[in-house]
Image (cartoon, rainbow, N blue to C red; front, top):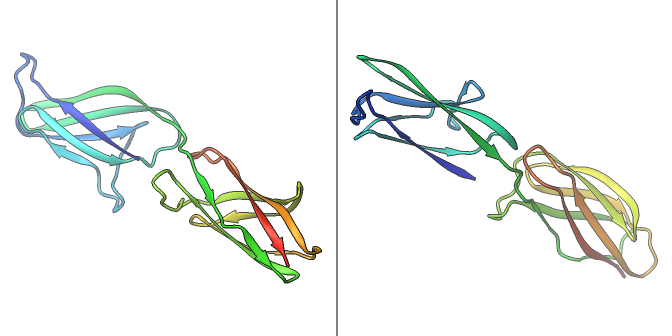
Length: 178
């Protein structure tokens, strides 16, 4: 998810300021882009705009906008930002096998269908019995499991655990043994 910080800068008389730089801090730490560069914006006509791809964990964060410019004292404005856990979705087609071991493949995506770039613990059950536990890496579940079952259709359940950034999810599909 993304957020846009819009900072209004005025002098002590309420006049808009031109020039100077604003940075944003979360919990006392300067926010940075994916290249490690501090997120900053120049004030134009009293406004500075900073776009941020949210990487903060789900909780309430102390946000500080810091303004600096030659001829002005450093100025700070404080606020709160609440980041909530995002939803994830497990995606898997029904699995068909005629072997005694089978590769289970699924993906874990966010609401925009992008694979989750974090490790997620996943439990796998067949007909209510735990079959395996694994860790999805970069949104991919790939695990070979024993499938020494008689011919038939079995309920297959994937459960992705809750993380610091995402809620849990559960997907029910089928495993068909020929």
